[in-house]
Image 1 (cartoon, one colour):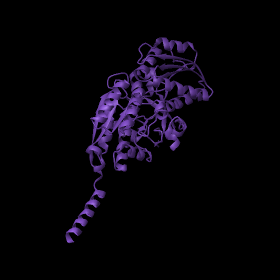
Image 2: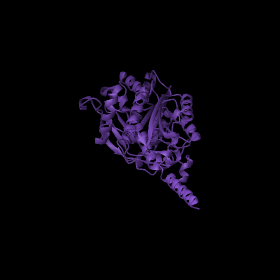
Image 3: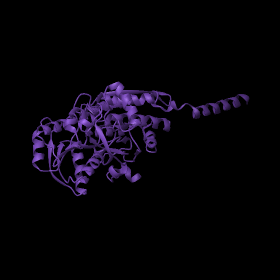
Image 4: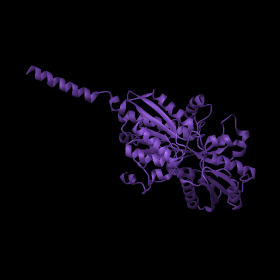
Length: 406
């Protein structure tokens, strides 16, 4: 009898230990693995590339390199802006590398490809550079977050400012693939809803080379705004070639890049980029918190972070905090926890993650400084307004079935 009582007591003790065991036991494989998948050598490498991995590591270091007592590891690879390469890398990472979350994804087609695989494998994706609306509409996933911006929010911020200034007629020069089409569509909708008119569109190959014919056609349209629905070196080259012809250098006709990073302004120089309006989610010199993160990044990269690279930092930091709060790295539980959190860090302000994966938060309306206004290198912008998230992000769409669930 005594032996039976001892056995029962031991069983109860073991059960109690199982309940109160360290939460590290709920981290799969004993390690949390974060992947950065982006362009390391091509058209988008300047605003993502190695800098995104550095930003991710800063977030990991800020968490002490561990979550729930388990180490956090980082892997990175070049998807070459090709959906098939991105998909193959993701499968390998999920199946063999045991990667838990992948972030970044410049080139929206790569993001959409990996999102599908992540759903099948019960893994998380965080689109810090993928901005196509499809990610929160018809392709939405409960395991995905579009962590920085989307094409509608970018278009709404810049377009509304220019329309308010009386720039009513628009012409689009668009990268001929998913991202460019999405940006053009969303900006056109804003222009027309605010009483403006789209006079025409020219679509260029991706990546582009010679933009002179497209920009001259846009100039000949007489449109008050030549809107660039492209990004990276495509945007830089279009603006440079326009400057050679004197396009966009008068108040009668301005150039408005709809997705512009601080790295693009650096490449252009203030003399060519001055006075341009743009919308960004992050500017390193906005306040003390943004400067503190940027200085840590600068010490490692010798340059300031783009908004996309800053978004990687915020995404990884928030993901790890959600694991800590959820007590597990199981994808569904982590994303559910993220949707209960207010995101407020050095990069994202007043952020809430919606059911469809849109992170709604404040953005900045910026204007590029004239050369004489800049006090130091990377001092490029005047902050003209803080754009509240609810004013610039799109409303939840019926195209995403997750929205019906609240």
